[in-house]
Length: 77
Image (tube, rainbow, N blue to C red):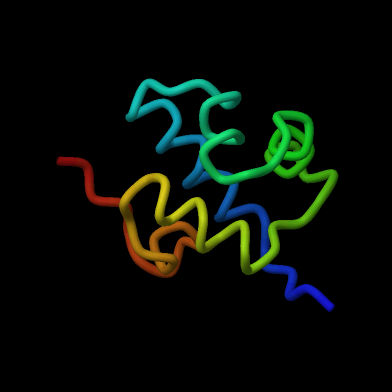
């Protein structure tokens, strides 16, 4: 059983991080261990993020899971 998390805020934060860090979706997908298609489906709301996705995305971008899920603001440095 996988825990599914809300996608709208998460997607908004991830898209912002991709743009701010100037990385490609392909690189993010590879960095978190999912296919580019899986990431694309999640970013377009066709699939939900799992807890594992959230943790790996937070690690990849060097932010907390609360930032990824939108519970804390994304601070631009």
